[in-house]
Length: 488
Image 1 (cartoon, rainbow, N blue to C red):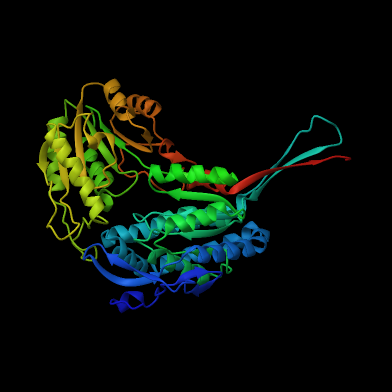
Image 2 (image 1 turned 180 degrees about the vertical axis):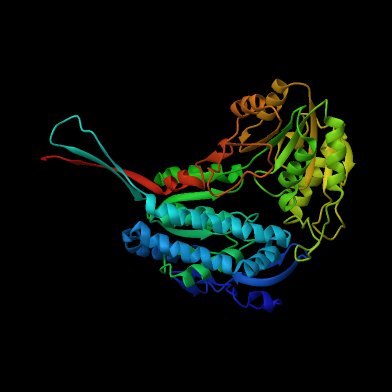
């Protein structure tokens, strides 16, 4: 298990599974390679765990649960805060590691590490605020006490597009609540998860409280965990299809489940919008992580009165983006994660142009041998095109003209998904009308970035169940208990 960039790994070198506070080889001694998507070359190998290792992780998390849940909220808070501090002290190393395995520009990776750490900081504070209440009893001589208790052992299944933040957003509230956690990170990006675990150990979080199981056999690993009676909660971020499968499996043991699934975000530009601000917001929302974010805009709905001006300004901004290796200072666009991602982008573009869309810029791979894809703008997109109906998950901005607010709402809501939506307007009344009518769990008015640790992140319809972040996020990991006290 060697690697070729030793200077980046001086502080964060682990490549084995993390179970019960120890770095362990998988039972069957298998390993798999992690590839740098910018070069398509392997740069490190990682433990490839199987069902036996999953059972060890469950045993570890179960064994640690009693002691961890018995700690006071303040005790857990102190340990989480120490973990947060260590992450921020190692921000540069974590960001380099993240860029190497995921591909995003280093500046974005640095931002993700800070964003991811913010959830640990937030939930370290929320750990002290898990409380209950006394309810008035209908009978004299009684007290009705309502308390909150940790759900138990939790499984977090996380994606490759935000390999730090998608872990911390799940693990931090679980640990703050008094749960123990097993993380199954994406096989494309396991190293960030292992680095986080290493820092959690340095922070003093006890063995077994956080476990990382890396694998190329996710279905086998997750099936073992979903069938095990000790695992009481699963939190998943990924595709709607996989989320539905996990929900069906969760019904067998009535596991609690949180799902953050696919999106098809509309970005609505009304006739009175500040177009320069809208273009800046569009660039942040669409081209961050090369369009590989669950809340990135998929469809730009632009009022006909400003359509031409907006499209001209957007194309000019897109042409300034620079593709390249994420570790290069000038890079603003990294590669797509793999060949399948490129194929989907190409399919959407070909389908749109075949049906009459206009290619305004981009539209091609950088070269045949890589997964770099030119940032692209399509004009005159219509509702029947694939790019309006499916999540592209790539650097393609699809512009759809509209005539009225009602038409924009109708187009925006004509999707099974409801995660994020964006609206640009100077009219507060119009903004509130749009927010009220958009079928979406999150709406940003005059901003292209809506994610932060204090806000409830999540969707409606087929975009998922539950919320992450905010004061509401910890509720996903707590059970309500009612205790009746009589004879008073």
